[in-house]
Image (tube, rainbow, N blue to C red):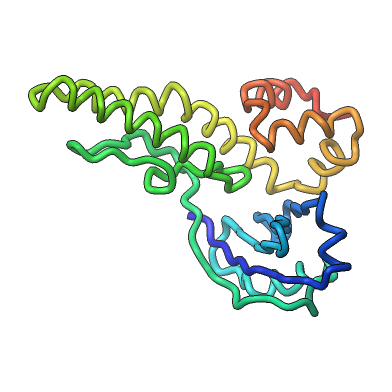
Length: 213
């Protein structure tokens, strides 16, 4: 599990205007973690998460708020919550109970994102359960197939993301220079983080050293 802390900031209009078409993600702040600012209609969600235990998340949240010039803006009390990133789990079914989304621990081990996989795995679970009910209570083959679908459609990508994360969070500065500052690579990395590209190509290119420019 990753640990996260998040709060909602309601800034003055002039400050909010600066975030209308922007968001912020600081990978490596805190070390081994991510800090973010996600704009909403009239407020900002600001948070910090980390994969390492024993980190003072509240202190890093205050530091990040200051770095984004948001420390003095109106805000709610912070809330803490876990992020169940994938750690190698292979079984997502016990009897007639199917696990999906956060319950299955399907959050991305590189970014902590989990909404897309929650939707995909939830759809798979519903389809498997519908097929099981349509076939009667005698056979459980449709439920057993759920594990196989998760494995073939989601776990390969999560495993690659996990391997990349182990390197990424050791040297986030290098990845920043290669993937963010570098104009040739930047759009490609943005597509990866947004889910428009998969990790198969990323892992292949990384192993071939093609990110080093």
